[in-house]
Image (cartoon, rainbow, N blue to C red; front, side, top):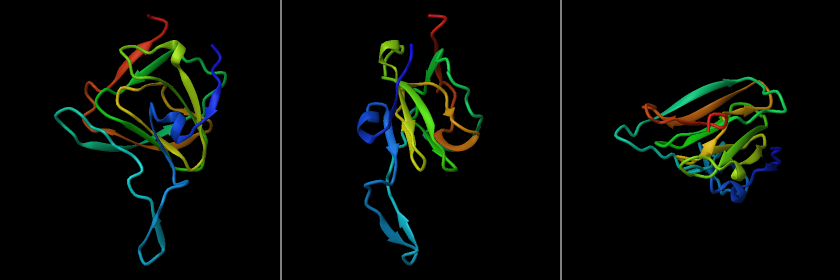
Length: 156
């Protein structure tokens, strides 16, 4: 299957999570008017007994295209945010929340520089697709036990 990569927007990504952006968001001046703060851009969701979240850095290697999408994963107990630490594009491949991913419902989105995403819990997605070697700050559940489900298309 050839996937068309769509430009991401808050509207077309909303069923999978949130687009994190400062575009068209009201800011507040803080720190003696030296900083613009954009509050509450994302909903971090943590479920289970331990509700602590963790912040990680993923060092990603540029993917080689065409890329085979042979599996999808989800995190049933938390959302998962990906925030690039430098200006870069990246691609997300997703499928709606369901018991197993529907291959006919898979979508791909390009995330532009200075934008980030946060997957809702249980949203099927392919691992990070970096378009260049880059670092990403991620936020998810600290106690990650039982917080990863993998669906391999070849085995099912």
